Image (tube, rainbow over all chains, first blue to last red; front, side):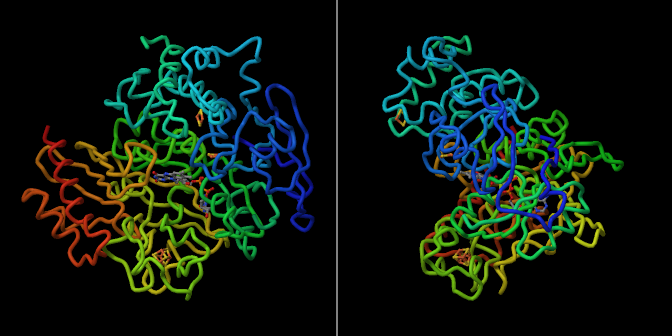
Length: 187
Length: 315
Ligand SMILES: Cc1cc2nc3c(=O)[nH]c(=O)nc-3n(C[C@H](O)[C@H](O)[C@H](O)COP(=O)(O)OP(=O)(O)OC[C@H]3O[C@@H](n4cnc5c(N)ncnc54)[C@H](O)[C@@H]3O)c2cc1C
Ligand code: SF4
Ligand code: FES
Ligand code: FES
């Protein structure tokens, strides 16, 4: 992720301030923000842009409820600062689909009952979409038996790759079925 | 989080020089530093974002090895075709750590420098010599199931939590740095992490403001590469014990162990015992171990994990 150094503060350490400017492309719209540098990407989305789909479960990288896709890769938005993402493209659950035009992964979660309370669901869905891209890109996982062959969207692979998304309601098996269906596999 | 100022570093020399500012910290993936800043265990007043420095490449080195940029993400290092083919133990160790989301952010340097997961280090109400030098160690006599069985001191019994570092110790990687005066050096991984001694607040031999630029892997060693991690859950948990091994067809090899000490634990003379089997290797490797009642199970667990790894290597 290469970064430009746009602000005066970075040019001249003497003018370092407690406000930092950052421009983010969120779900296709560019937002220019002046933020306290402490603001995480998650708080920026929820508190500043009112995109409350991304959830705060733990705020410490342990639950995955805050998962969003940045420059095509899923990350925990609670453990990254917004100012570290100058110019980056961020996709949240709001950018994947709409109630009238669901993303296939959203539709599959509905069909397979991949949730109960729904709190973990936006993170699960963002993660699941990225998981299938990772498998397509040939990125191995702990469940990949042979590192020299391309991984496939097997049950073991999906379970391992989704282990960073915790569901207190225990909807795991339905979540796995939804992902398997989108991957084109037999549920 | 305590307030801090933020800058994006423009060059390695700039970053290293800025690192000399009192109470400044580099930030890479942020997955450990921000976690600790939220708990006010780390309280830097200035953050230097090193993500724009271009250290995100994996390149062939002149000695036949690989030069891994310090900003290469854990996902990308694990997925690199050359690493998967020639340094399988490293791919496996990385993939056994954290979650997909975290590995997408976590960097090579940040992973090496992640801090202990000792529960008392995280609990700011408790004494901890690593967090607050001189305050005491709540883990000694406390809950120490996860903690060290060897190389510890009366001041600290923490373990280093990284999986990646254990594989790098088995490979004998070297860490390349630039110091705040601009000079460069290279540190053998064996000398990079410290034992706690009477200064457990110092995790590594890096100087203040010293910036990691790359980690060098030696030329491929051949053999079978295995990383076996034993943990409380099948995924997304830190190791109780882990074993990184490179075993040659003639039965010789290298073994490094995680989850037992303040640094990845490797004792080269123990490797000479490989032909005599896991019991002999473990006896030498953990000679002088001083486990607590809570974590004495780690000693037989290391032996059994080494046994499993050697059986896999023969299969
Ligand atoms: C829920 C959870 C589970 C985890 N599970 C595991 C696990 O099972 N196994 C495992 O190994 N790890 C695990 N981790 C830890 C994870 O691997 C680390 O957080 C990560 O590797 C840190 O890398 P980073 O780039 O995000 O570091 P940062 O947080 O950015 O930095 C960490 C430290 O390194 C310093 N630093 C960063 N870059 C440089 C540089 N170039 N030069 C000098 N100093 C630098 C920073 O100043 C800071 O002190 C887990 C983390 C979480 C949150
Ligand atoms: S073992 Fe080390 S990190 Fe844990 S409480 Fe004691 S001094 Fe702190
Ligand atoms: S809120 Fe980010 S991982 Fe839990
Ligand atoms: S649906 Fe309730 S936490 Fe997952």
